[in-house]
Length: 191
Length: 407
Image (cartoon, rainbow over all chains, first blue to last red; front, side, top):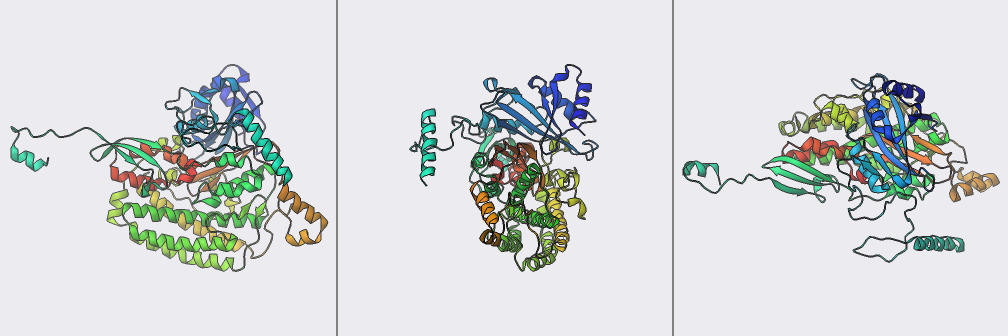
């Protein structure tokens, strides 16, 4: 099933503005659609329940930080219609993407539609700092509760050279971070 | 106070009141049956679990962030350390996704070797699962048998790459080197003997009354919940959902192999056991077929020296070979911008890497779809309402690997 066919099925079930859904190219040939943030929940419910779609299995959710581009974040939902007994007719996959601006990093939760989304969204909140409105239990999941910063953001420091402080989280100012990177580069040049 | 004491005193006498409040028990993170470092806070009413709270993250190593600093080929040893019992399943998923982005097609021999390795890896992982699962429920001797067979598989790994748990033998663009001499014989010896070993395990467990009483009707999840929680692999198949990536979305030419997907119906710990046991038989069958297709010597990579290093004799005798060798080891190769996700059927279910490239020689973002992560999330669903002793049985049956959960 191509991305355009999936969009047709979506617009049949949810009449309205055609610009909400947008087909996109993907390198691996998986059908890819962009969904506007406001329509994410309605679209997800249709994708799960519509008999011609039946994407009952949410394989994964992930985010990508395109800093400094705007919109900064992209949420990527990997959906599968497994096509066996009671879960759809033909097996198919779909990549659903949502653009999230950096200054308003909030997305609606889909954890009521797929239970699997609960922890997946917590992980994205933990590592990227995206908020999920309506999420039942939005806490850090992999990092300690008192951790500062969001490690998978592209502006999070990676080459930390700072004396270890035992009881407080390690934080660098932007100047320290730039100095660290420059020192590492000049060392590499000398070698 | 004992019931008999109360009866002796009669109802007119009021002894100390029965304590009926719930008790909170902390299980883990350091508990031998939690398969690593999983922490459960259980609220108990007597022996029954009333609520459960799962805490993970003790093994978080930030591999996804580290990978963004590495060249594509250097990521392979990292991803093998995520799911440390199914190491080569991770590296296989990673290679397939990157190769999809590069648009390269593997030679048939490489595909067959990868199938063989993937199936041996599945047997290896299931053997650890069976051994530890049995140990936790009280069948201690099974562990000894399972680790005996696993040792032989680890020896095969060592033969392949000199490393037992994380061989990094699968590479983007093929394999690290050709099969060692004596490989066919070693694998064949193992595969010929393994089915009777499986019978040995089944003799110990399948009709064992204690085993049946500990596992039947325990940790049941409905079909709808299985799908909603994203439980795939043996967990889904034990619930009667015949979803196997090898059959539904074939890769590496799995459609040309003759094998069956075992399906259960009860969705309990016992059916998960039966499904995994049958999977080991089917894996043996696939491995036999793959082994028959593989020639002892032959092509082992795509021979495109922009992606894989050229053979050493070319490096030492040809100018072009030397340049290619230098480029591969200093800059690596670039991957066209875009994203890819090619799932494989790992020992624990659908296993795949969502890979984003910005066209440079390093990944922009990689994300593992970790089956254990979702299995862990569904744990409270399976243990609430059951007995505390069954918690151990359920954790064992989900086959979670904490390295996979926390990454």
